[in-house]
Length: 232
Length: 272
Ligand SMILES: Nc1ncnc2c1ncn2[C@@H]1O[C@H](COP(=O)(O)OP(=O)(O)OP(=O)(O)O)[C@@H](O)[C@H]1O
Ligand SMILES: [Mg+2]
Image 1 (cartoon, rainbow over the protein chains, first blue to last red):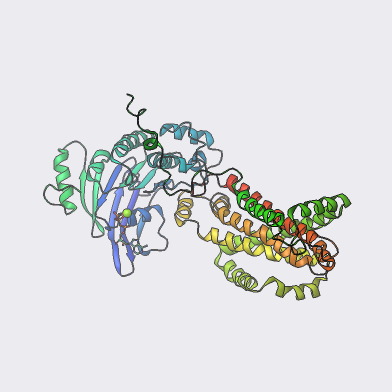
Image 2: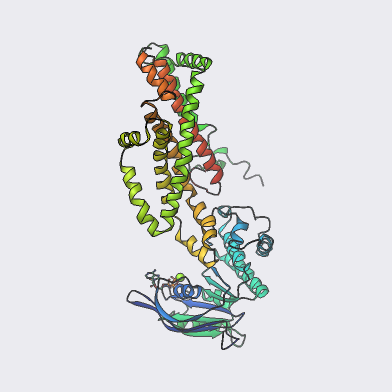
């Protein structure tokens, strides 16, 4: 960021190891402000490891490399991760002082106005994930990290969440790094899709309308090691 | 469509499956009432010799006499006071030690060992030492209760603390909670179920240790009243004492459970 104002995230030669296994191997990555990046990769390829490195949650993992991320980073996990003993609104404004009004607005944005006093246990899986989104966005992050946030949701809810996420991202304009294993989800949401393989970014596709999505989809699937017409 | 309405009642009725079913009002009184009924029947039929065990109604009339003379209230007050004081010292002590030992490895290294040792030593074994140090007055009795109470509070709170899901700790880190807010929003509520379980053991333990303390060299209290009755062979007075201890234990447990249900209303478990 110091050298180039257009870069929001700069990752250089990032290496992460678990024991003798190198999961991330001199990985380079840049993300611009407001850019929506989707990260694909086979199971175990290190997507979560990369995300945790960006979120600063991997203090106990061996490795080195340069990671530059903005101060305001929000994380959405695969599980909604709401504190069960805090009411919905208190979960949204967790760690923020005097932000109740903003929290209410944020809940209204995700379509949960009126549920402020509910316990997380009383919400459906999709609603819980929406609370988690509200909790992330109320902090006005410059970077939103999301690790398969819709992985546990059914197909219909997932599509609704896609629409919601797009709308919220357009309003709040954070950069997004979305980890997913769903090629169609990546294509539907992202400006740029990356494929992680063997510890590095092995393929990259821009979705700027220049090419047909079927073509892009086929290439991404190939990069993921899926041949023929089988789906991930 | 009337299709649903005409279905036979049995088919519409929701299956209970594996949950214990809806809560029974005053359910905790059912078991004790049954015991009381059994005791009454045995007394009426003469199966129970009154010299061996007085009938329930004798116990009631004796209790009435004891209340009339004021003896019951005085002794009850002395006992309740000891228990409350013991709890007042024991609960904060146990909670504080659990917090220190649960939140830092050094705290655990220093505190956990001695507490486990104290746990292994029977309370009665400590009595001679406590009597030597503190005499046989109120201080000794309250100390005995407090020492008994702090152990379950410590053990269960500590366990509750340590079993807080590490994912919540991670969440606290990502939203940038400070140490104080972390303790308030994550640690304390997370350890509350453990603490309350500890409380349930603590209140019953408190009455237990009260008996131990009061049977030795006491001039007031329910235990003293019972010990005196023993020398005169008054089983009815002894029974009044036993029933009193039982009731006090039962109601303190019910009280804690009530608090538990209020405080843990966010939990939907088998019991909810
Ligand atoms: N705490 C850990 N200790 C040891 N190995 C780990 C640990 N966490 C992850 N790994 C290993 O690192 C590799 C990458 O894990 P990671 O969770 O980043 O994969 P992923 O790409 O997110 O996979 P998925 O799509 O299944 O979530 C895996 O092989 C995993 O076994
Ligand atoms: Mg993962």
